[in-house]
Length: 83
Image (cartoon, rainbow, N blue to C red; front, side, top):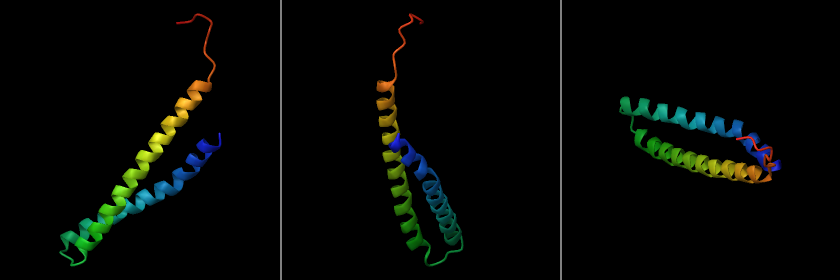
């Protein structure tokens, strides 16, 4: 199924983006601890990217679920009387 393959191809690049967002979060915490003047600005960018990452994860979860529903509808139903 082409859609499933595309989703699998997205897994690695999205994982790298997630790691980058997490690394930025650690940098923000470090800058805040050091009382650096740019900490607040970087924190705003980090919040924006983290929210975007969560939105992408929600959309991908919906897509995976819709693919499962379609795949389950196409699966043959057992008729051997097994419970």
